[in-house]
Picture (cartoon, rainbow, N blue to C red):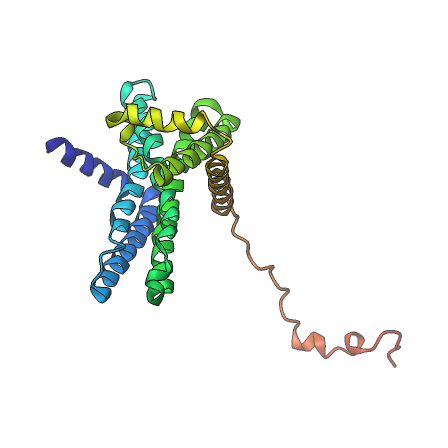
Length: 261
């Protein structure tokens, strides 16, 4: 367990840096609020139906963890070692878990109509937190790609990640695969994807879902990216109030066209 404690200490040092402290604190606060809401619902209803949100929120943190470690490796090793490649691959593999929580809206059913609006706010709070966690990690990885290959390649990278994530969310929601199944169930994953690919016309709804979810990710990321680059607008400076002595001057106070006597 020594390696785990070393990784945790490294993550803590990275998170407490001046440039990352504020977003990390905000994300930690949002996650704590979401956990509190889940536990409050469990205690008030004596039902653990939405306890899965705790696990899903934990999985949503993993892309950010891998992105922070990948950025640290890139800055120290110039991205020319296996460690950076492994961390970047793990980030891409787990990234769909961050926006995946939005699909948990499917658990809102008429069976729990008495708590519908409470449950809706609960799931949306967790989903929004997971989405921002994923987008912060994507922003970090986009910065690395931009330094390696330029701005155009970085935006192509963002579009490609959105498309792969739409496909990954579809795999998780409808075929019930997890990120780690790439390593532990590769044969099942291959057959699951193959059976869908061989009959694309029968599964048009799946293709549409993956494409629309990818578009949703790209659209929301672009909006949040634009907000982070929004300049601080200040109200225009108003002219100073006229001096009372000048206001009393007849030449100033006369109506247009009048002649002073």
